[in-house]
Amino acid sequence: MSTYTQILYQIVFSTKYRKPVLIKENREKLFKDIWGILKNKDCHLYRINGIEDHLHIVTHIHPSISLSSLVKDIKLGSSSYIKEKQLFPDFKSWQEGYAAFTYTIKEKERLIRYVQNQEKHHKKMTFKEELIKLLKEHGVEFDERYLV
Image 1 (cartoon, rainbow, N blue to C red):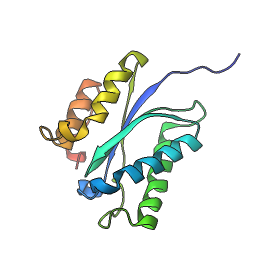
Image 2 (cartoon, rainbow, N blue to C red; image 1 turned 30 degrees about the vertical axis):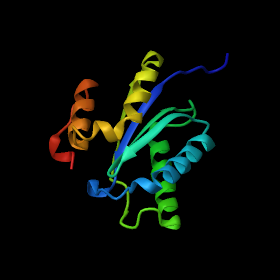
Image 3 (tube, rainbow, N blue to C red; image 1 turned 135 degrees about the vertical axis):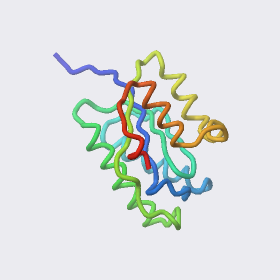
Image 4 (cartoon, rainbow, N blue to C red; image 1 turned 30 degrees about the horizontal axis):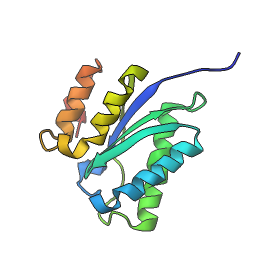
């Protein structure tokens, strides 16, 4: 028998200290680089977006890839790309850690729209407020002291 999966992930991570350094005019280049990383890992990207201080990635992860190793590869690869191409002059690195949530395929379109509308969404809510909301919605226990 073959392996069949359909696990939709939303992966969220921020810049170091949540510094607002991801300037809009170069974000598309970063998104294309991350898409290439995912494609090379046989993962399917549904949507990527973000604002100055964080990113959201909606993807299906190939069953042979662990979530933690994928996030590590995305962060390392994109950091190198950002520095090599000098996309964001004030970018130092990504913050340690990440958040990841699973969704059913029935939620895919709603999730894609949510990620697509990040700029509009963040006119009303900070990244920290959004992250706390997501953690609570998914029943993830957390200590607010570590949400720096």
